[in-house]
Image (cartoon, rainbow, N blue to C red; front, side, top):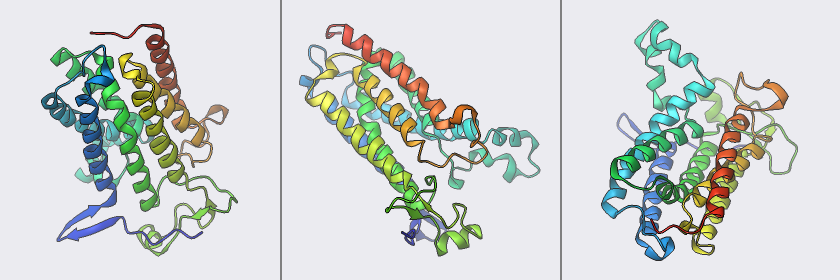
Length: 289
């Protein structure tokens, strides 16, 4: 299957390009905000405790989470995948090279970096407002797969983060006229590859959202602080580690020890922390505080 002639720009208004990737972030944040607000207003889900935030507090939290996603995602990408971007701040020959780290429009965001940024934002907000940290995490975690779904769809539209070579019937050749003109060739080559972006949209997005929905509405696990957060961390870490087997490793990181990828390495701590949170929440009775 040949990659469709997708245009990463939805519409141009003068010099301003409205890109699908940017809209994916907007959709993820807005819909995640809406979903978290519904959870925060449903007192029955949190019994014997109360929802961790008011509507006004949630509105404030969304701003900090948005900053955590953007700053953490970009700084984490540079740290994990292109550390030379930090060095170029001091060694770049031009201001363009020195400021490359901050050129978000050039692409390059890391989920794990964004997770660290969001975690720091949640920690700071909980401490500042006297909110139980794990309960606040349980409110935010179920909304994250929404953003993951839209983000991975945008990755597919952009023709980036493609999968490994394969012979499966649904394989995609990530090469078309737009990509060829943009890069002077096809970075993925004109070979059939796994559409790993769509696998991730399905597993990290839809399936993980469904799992957390069941945990909240059927198993009533918001009554056990940390359980839903743990499920998210473990579920995403496991999904990402498995899908790394069909996702093309990043350039320069395709020869790590034991056949591991950077995505696998970064997902292991998530799985460990998630398992610990699940175990602790399961072993304790529901909390009213």
